[in-house]
Image (tube, rainbow, N blue to C red; front, side, top):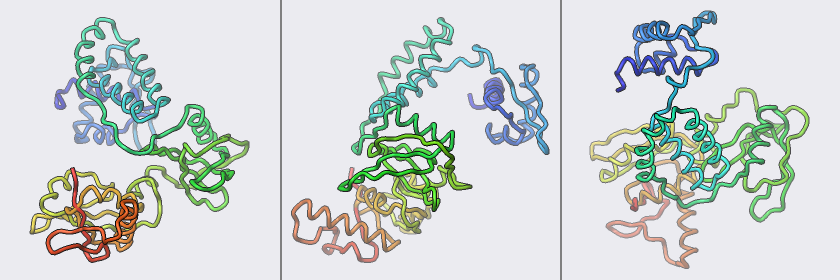
Amino acid sequence: MRHDKAMVVIDLARRLAASAEGLTLDEMARDLGTTRRSAERLRDAVLMLFPAVEEVFDPPFKRWRIRGGLSAFEQAPTAMELLELSKAAQALRTAGEPGRAAALEGLERKLKSAMRSATLTRMAPDLEALQDAETTAIQAGPRPSADDALLQTIRSAVLARSPLAFDYARPGAAPRRRVMAACGVMFGRANYLVAADRETGKIQTFRLDRMTALEALAGYAAPPEGFDLQTFADQSFGIYQDAIEDVVLRISADGATEARAWRWHPSQSLEDQPDGSVIVRLRASGMRELAWHLFTWGRQVTIVAPERLRTVMAEELAAAQRALGLSIPFPLAGEGGARSVTDEGSQFGKTN
């Protein structure tokens, strides 16, 4: 199906209708995963089938777009597309995000209401069967919490670039009033506002469930020039942002296959070793969250660098000892007895 020309032509038409500024030939080739010459042929096919295509001169490029959208015939969603939309809404609701789930469920209803009744009736049995056969597993962790009013206030402040004021209470501390420049929201195990100090420009994160009395103020407060939310998020192994470290991990031969298939971090690189092990390199902050993750790999992982990651792991092991009421060194071992977590190549084994 990927190589069926009719499907690719319709896909390109949809992309041209979905882009307000239009697409260049190079962008068409990139999006369709083809050569520029093939993109030219596909564009010509779209021009023949869709007379509404416009050519826009955007020096030094030319762009093409379809204004006014496509008809319901070309835009009818497939059963797989509706399934994924339904699963995304279900996953959000399962994760404790009813507001965001309701937005996707509303979109699903709108799509179905715009479909021809015969088309919807034909795909309904398959869609129901697939929905019953797939679900989202519940993972342990903090329950994200952000009501619709709170998210709407943040989004309004982002769009208007207005100061955002709120009371923020860290564990064990009294609430403190903050006035920040909102940069965006990161959704994950817990949801965080990313905001900049209005005087220093320092970027900070705030858990949404610890924010109260939120309001957008009059005035202007923009993110620092050049700030990119995705780039900021990619710096950390998780949510927490601290010093960026060069991390080197060795995964033993018995865990190497899984390690190669694992998405560790956007900056990751993997190097196969003669003994069957694999070296994982990444550059990130968030050593504590990385340490938490490494517990799941057990003896299969060796921390080569940095020293701070070994220190953080040792601190977490000590905390686990105290929680268990242990007064003896935590057993990390394999053959030959226990290993100190400060030894070169501290090891932990993956559990299932």
